[in-house]
Length: 223
Image (cartoon, rainbow, N blue to C red; front, side, top):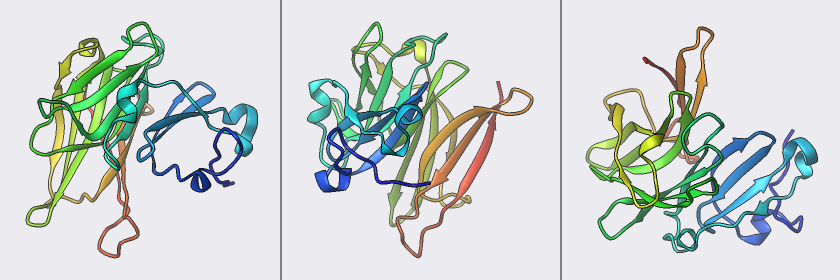
């Protein structure tokens, strides 16, 4: 089943010109959706309201509304119970940069709300993020250049290092270029396999272009 996404008054997001829904994360029966160009976060309760659910804007830091057009909220990740920052919503910009050229990010809600930064290197931009049961914020990054093609990187940042005012970097789990079977990887999910292994699942966005593909990749993260 499919239905248009709606805003708080029941109107569709399209009619409100609230583009572009780029990020999604879940907290129990609530889904948080980040709208990049409008730089808003909506909360949907699908279990209660089904496909007629209305997105209710949540209160966000002023810095989110100031992120650049079409380079704003690109990744959302809700931290579940039992992990550092539990109950917090982590929001990361695609290419909103601080005065040092690092990616602007936010801790929303929880015990220690505030802003932090993700160190930006090698021109990579964030395209998604997810929380690992290992206690890491895993960030999916990519960049494209006509001379070198598409590039992909996965970084794992310990949740314990994220706090207001911090600049975090993390460990590179995977890096690949157009010499490998990748494309414009834009989405990341983290699950456990049948024997408890951590699985990283990525999917690409073909942008309705004939020269791009929809590619589904899955990796096992050895612990």
